[in-house]
Image (cartoon, rainbow, N blue to C red; front, top):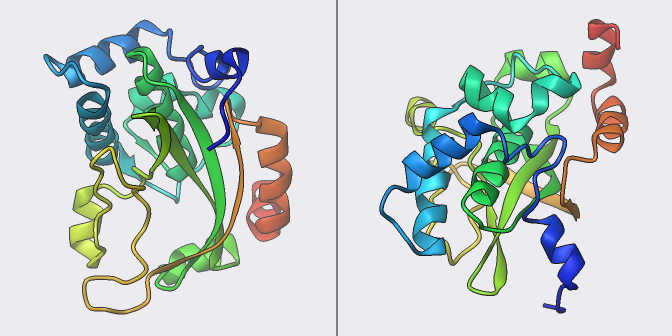
Length: 213
């Protein structure tokens, strides 16, 4: 990994428009979650599972207005989708001093529910995840699918140990194809809002058409 300039590195620690890690509720939740744990890896693990399981994954009620995709909003409403749950994890990490950023990928879901396929018009999704800087390297952390959802649909839950990339499994519990990463995009210190909206309009013209966006 190439060295990160000091100013760029600071951008992964500062609160931003969407990764609003300076909001009191975000700080309080982060501190309560890490508790007595003092290591970055230990804190990151606790934060990952708090976001994975206490914030319900819900791809059917996506609101892309700016105020709706801030970390503090997701924490308050207790549900989100992959991008917003990643934003929240990134904010919680920064609230305890762990550098974080957002990453994006094209992801094919082989077992998307028919309702979701009808809604979005495709089985290729623009997927968001967090990256946390731990032990001098960036580690991918994907807290999207909560444990209850995984158990209900036979999905292998994503586990996080702070050392290995935590990404979706290619197979489900029965050995059937589940997900495939088609392409990774860039990483960002904050949600590149206008860029993401433009990409989503390309990926989901049916959804945006029905929303009147």
